[in-house]
Image (cartoon, rainbow, N blue to C red; front, side):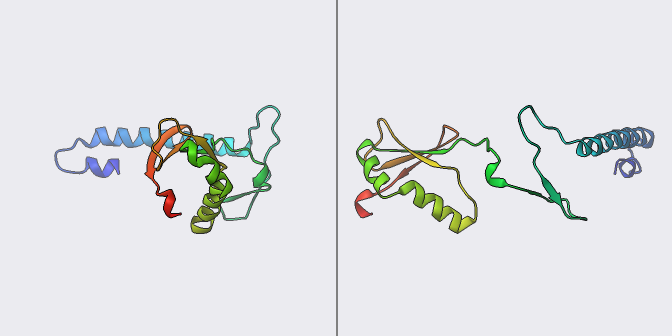
Length: 144
């Protein structure tokens, strides 16, 4: 690509040839380093190496026991009005959300925590992801 840029009228061909050589050398060394590091799996102290089975001709791997792999996600948190939290826990809102999300999208969410939201309106719910406020919803609880 860089050589073809150099062949355009007004562009200096020697500069683009040098750039293409430098980029090719960098690509070669990065590719070789990636190949070496893929051959040597790294494990940190106390962790067991994951068993990954690969089919020939496929770049996708399969983790042996996905349920035992620890995730680095912080659970989702729903801040609800203090007066509504007990009713929502009885209605199993968190479990219903996880179940419906799995049915709709095929993705298993981490545990959703219900917490009291200080200073929230009686019909508001706030969603926190990794303890960062993402969205505030208006929910009409009387219609549920």
